[in-house]
Image (cartoon, rainbow, N blue to C red; front, side, top):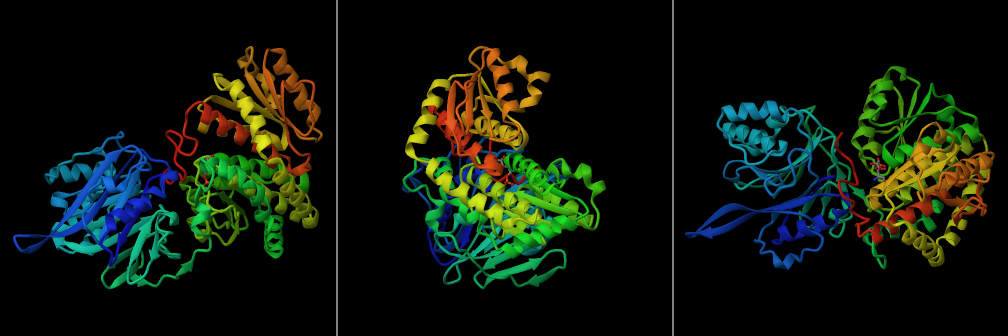
Length: 600
Ligand code: M6R
């Protein structure tokens, strides 16, 4: 979703620095961008502060920053907008300013009561140029500022009026000061050298400048000026000291290197990431397994692709540990709050650790007294900090909007925990180590070519289907998400057995149908379902350890028993990527989507 980056310090190229930082947040998905920089120019011999604002529709990635004439400045902020309130226009892009740029803000999230506040402001003669809730927030801060002339107090008073989840960055032409506040949307403060500070929605935005960060928690605010950074707990209305955390991943991990897109780089990273994911402290995995054993109901909760991983998890726990685990999408979980009580275990699964729906579900579970666990890729993320226990996916930064390596890392860890629950962590680890090494062999250039050839054959189809049974059923759903996200081909996933209850009516001559096959007790049944599709003219793509007569095109995967969902999804990821390229789509930044979905 929206990307935020700001800088205040001793350097005079702040505008350029924040725009460079914004480029590093491109992967989050957005439709317009903008920058604001505070300047102090001599007018008639007097230093006169002003704020330079520049906004544009489209992507910043290709822009050569030297083409922009940016002013000298030591305080600047930039924003990439994923439209929520109002269309994609320059007027709706951030930053938004209130009267005479006394207040300039950028914002992530939603001010839910903005219409109510807007009515009040209109009565007080405020005028609006955009349709956004952000401009309303800027005017609310301004109206408070007009009363007290104190920027910090004005922001504090205004925040009390807003409902919803958000992150704000505020500056004013009258003060050499940056204020940031969060409730629900991530904000991280980077501490540079010589009193330099950065504030961003994600670390890659300023990672080139520092590896020392402090995380803002919900209901916290930071004020950055020449005396440094002061943190405030807004609920307790007092100053707090933040812990300085060192970032361990280096900048190269978050770059494309020799690959043309992050998506294919991250698919290929899976040669290593499964191995890394299962390299966990055994004591921690056993502790989690015990918590599941003792829990009064365990809930695996995630959204989108991660939600499908949670579904795979429930099959794995049933198969391997004979344990029933509940699964819910983050957005639907609050409907089941009635079953949560002290003793329940809530497991949030998330790549980013920031997905609003999952985070809110976690808060609901916390309120009801559940124990909270987070299985996240981003250390220090909101879910990580809210949880009682965290396990890290260790997939490294995932930047393509379409999740690939985090997905398989999550599944590997859930498989390991399921084996630990069955008292057999050693067997689980052995299976996963073998799987990791077989994936390393599988991901070679010939394999990718074989899938690219398939993509060429089917690139112009209107619809495609993915089927699976058992633990490969959720992967059929996930395969369809991958195809939808980047190829924009209409794709749907089904449980193989469900086809004949309706969806088979959609099959016409040549319709591609991917069958995800494992060498398990479901094999004959899923092959029968593939035969049923073929009998109606379907073109069967088999993802399977062995070639079968029904397949029109076979993509071989290793035979890895309970790790089959991990290997079966990888060829679909590669297929989706190549379909995207052949259809001239940008696989890293698909239309309408954002990497980290921080609004509900
Ligand atoms: O960061 P999370 O794992 O919580 O994200 C959840 C979903 O938004 C995410 O998996 C989404 O479905 C991906 N774009 C799928 O590729």
